[in-house]
Length: 92
Image (cartoon, rainbow, N blue to C red; front, side, top):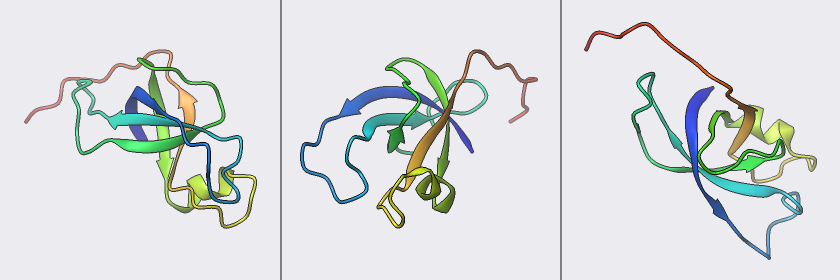
């Protein structure tokens, strides 16, 4: 799983089978200091996350298993909305 911040939404009227009625959000993976790392990811959201919230995301086959249609083209999914998190300072 990855920590991420929701930074936007994606609207797509036409989607592949298995993606109907799935909300898509743009998330930015972050490190423990809440700094952006890597590139943006489009993730499926079935739990109601919103822009500005910190979330947990999973990728690959675990994300695909969350879709209702078997073999749907899902690569990332939001699996939790983070209420808070803290970590000890990391040395660089």
